[in-house]
Length: 115
Length: 130
Image (tube, chains in turn yellow, cyan):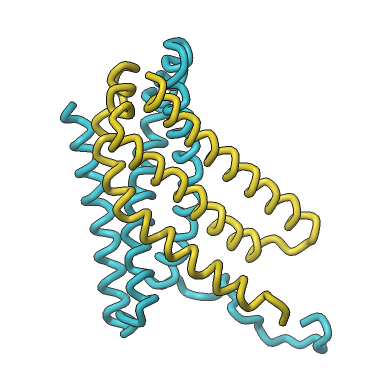
């Protein structure tokens, strides 16, 4: 029992806090996304050049990848048992979520700030 | 475990001999949809990146995502998303210490499944409006 007990409750809390943030963010994201998806490039750009839609998409995607990272880490901890697999899968999880999170910030910033 | 003497007693929770119940089925489904949603999340990032890039880049992403295959993946993802969304709210209610009576758990489970299909249909309807 070093700091492990605090790390555990910290994970529990961040998973819940991100879940709560995702409820309104997802609802606000889905409607413009569903009506823009399948449209032309300029239609997509018009939607996400709008600061409100850009901000919603930014909050949704960043929170989503934080939430996904924690969820996948929990699944990996449950099913991977060898030290090698734990290292490989946890590293792959972190790499995927960090890259995707940063790419979503970049993608939205490019559309919203540099039209 | 490795230190205990070998016995023929089954190990808990011995999932393969357990009859699947609505509680356990929905719990596993929450996990499966959560993991699966990594795919559409990455696809949406690709779509947004492509939209900000050249027309060639956008057309590449758009033609894959709006193809028969892309639409199937995204429609299944949409259901997975609404399921995980509704069941996630159910989990948050449990975290507040409520809704643990067995009949309530069954009822909220059925409500989550029904809600996931209704919300999927509604979202698909919004998509066809434009």
